[in-house]
Length: 416
Image 1: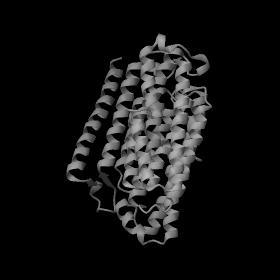
Image 2: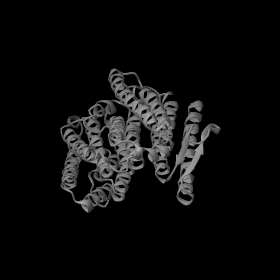
Image 3: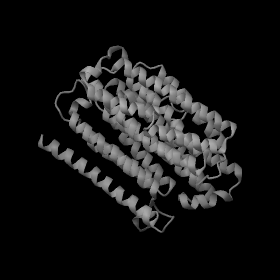
Image 4: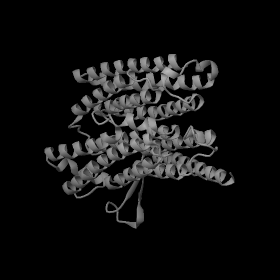
């Protein structure tokens, strides 16, 4: 018991220290400009360069906040938050080191100044997340872990091939240099490189039609793991898209294609959510659907659209992780998460009911919550340009928001 307390304290202290450091980095990036470090005494642009600007510092803060919250949740819930049949009160021993390794991969991706180091961050994520997804070794978790590993390896292979092509075409993988040299390449080469990077990141972010793996993988994992995955891992792919599209491909050659992908991701994802009777699968489908909102803002391409996309990323990380954690509390209390076997929880667990209701309404975009602010920001950015395709996206985002509200209120009515 004493060793477990020491382990919990060390993990929590490390993540809290990283969070404090991220706040200082945000202050430095905001007041002094981007903070750049050439690691290992390498000549700049030939070795690994770490770059922290306001965006990456903000993502670090939100990421460490989610990790810290999940650590507190798992420490408070004990072993039962990982396995209903498990005995004892301590989380599985492998959880803490695996979570910290995964956190290192997330942070690596956020601060990478070159494409290959970003790829390394993706691979660190893959190794640790496979361990987390298969905690307990049940058949369903191992099957989900194999699916997740296959999809992640496919994404990594496409990304690595894209990195090789970028290096062949530009002679560098440093993002600052790539952004300067990309405009000198023939347009066909630019389109090929942009498409390769988008496909690699879109698989990781679960953008339609490469999203069917997510609802089959995430719901089988324990609540703390699912919260981290839903909150952070898909957003790593979105962050990589934002970073590369705004820095390397600011002209937006494939923005029309991205708009169609955003629309289909929103609509197909929410239709899947409406059809579910299992709470975690329903939330997983809404996760896929709302990735479309982030891609919507990025595809608009204007400062207002990108700002709204970044705002929506931050909002969605916090809200989606909260929903999965509270759903884990429901499952721990009742032993099930299927709507056919739930009911009346507002009488037996009113605080859990409230904790579920508030983020659910936020996700649906009810004012004055952050989900409403983010969606209004996206729609205003689209309306400022006003092309027929963007008006179609506005209509699709409204329909998706209404169907999200329907799916969540139906779950609320039947479960609580």
